[in-house]
Structure formats: C-alpha cells, structure tokens
Image (cartoon, rainbow, N blue to C red; front, side, top):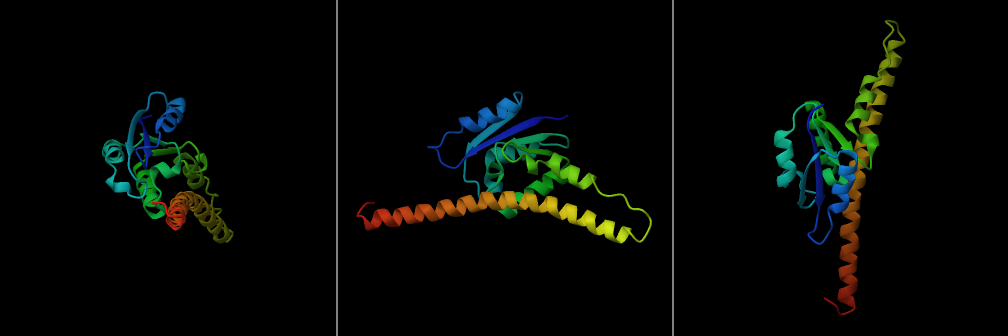
Length: 169
C-alpha cells in the first residue's frame, strides 16, 4: 500500500472545511491532507490538488469527502478519474463508495469467462454491458455534483433578482 492523501476543498472562505478533514481523518488517520479554498469547477487550477497529483504514484490513494470535492464538472471529473485509475491510483469517495476505484476494478475484473463456443457472442455483450454500467455510475455521480452547482447558481440568481425587486442590493 502506498501513500494516502486526503483532499478537502471549500468554494468560499466563509465556509468551514473542518467537517471534511474530520471525515477523512476518521477513516484514514495517517493521511497527508491538503486543503484549499477554490471553486470545484476548475480542476486543473487548484494548487493543493495539483500538489497531490504531481506526487501521487501507482498504489497511492486519494481520499475525498465526496465526489464534488474532486470536481463539480462532470467531464473534467470523469477524465481525471480515468487518468488516475489508469495510473493505478486508488480513489476513495467517503460519501459515494459505489464509485471508488476498488468498486470499479471489481466490475472490470468480474468479466464472465469465455467458453470457446458461440455463446461467447452473448457473453461478450454481457461483459461490455457490465463495464458500461460501472462507467455510467461514475458519470451519474459527477453529473449530480455538476447539477448541484447549476442549481446553486440558479437559486443565487433568483435570490438576487428577488432582493433587487424588493429594493435591496
């Protein structure tokens, strides 16, 4: 087992990061935790996440309190997930264990054995379907994180409009 990194992120300085750090420490007391205040939509511009990404090696682990801490942009999140998975890095999402890389790896490893008969045509399709199912679970988690951002922006815009209509700035 390699090094365990924890990553905690808040979007605004007025938010409290302690809950995320506490959750990571509870499961991984020896984790090297990096924390920062930065928007979740810009994955590659985050200094502390990049600090981890530059050091992480195969068999290392990165722990996030939730998938939204890694990325709130579905395409960027999935891309980074796949890159780290291919590199042999374990990803753990404390609130969404169903998309941890260990769970994904089980789906990859649980392919149905081929028989050497015509039934292999069907079995190959089943194996592809199981892989697609695992990939879709990951996409759904990142899509949900992005939806949270989109909903928050919409509510904020509506709140500002309401305040403006009521004569408040």
